Length: 214
Image 1 (cartoon, rainbow, N blue to C red):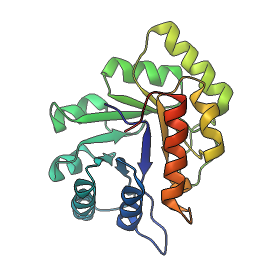
Image 2: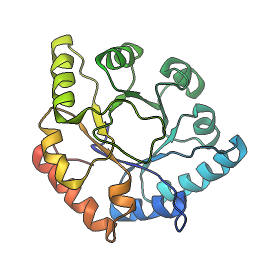
Image 3: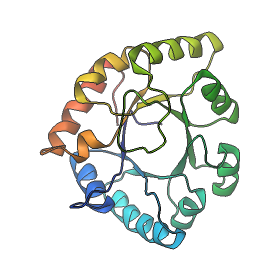
């Protein structure tokens, strides 16, 4: 089952990926994506192994961004591939059956391609400008999401779609009304004074607006 609340790790001067992942898990997040950029394969594997210790302790799912080889090396639950990364088909071949493969989309063509590949979920965005991603695709906003979700319905595309990109707590209810399955966030939790409080609010909105979230 694809969770409705995804946390994507980030790194800041005072907190590294592992500290943020620990806080997110302790706050109640059960779907974690480790996204480390500009890092060697060896260091990525070392980091991913430590992240998996944390997620295992909290019965959380761990996905690795971009790198199915790293995901396989640490026996992560799956991988998320970007538009310019390895294809979902290649990622699944490396990981094998039984692992989660997600992909990034910005247009209906992206969504259709990922659907045809048979991905488990689609990260659609960005909702608005975000500093956590260097190469940002065109901003979608609510109108963009509604248009794309309507087109998905017309095409019979039923892959769970996760909204991503600069999402704040006050945006969630409106975004969910477009028909997306859930949301992926980073800064709204990582920058929070009270991460657990933010996660509680997000889960409450998700549970009220959709079926119960894990």
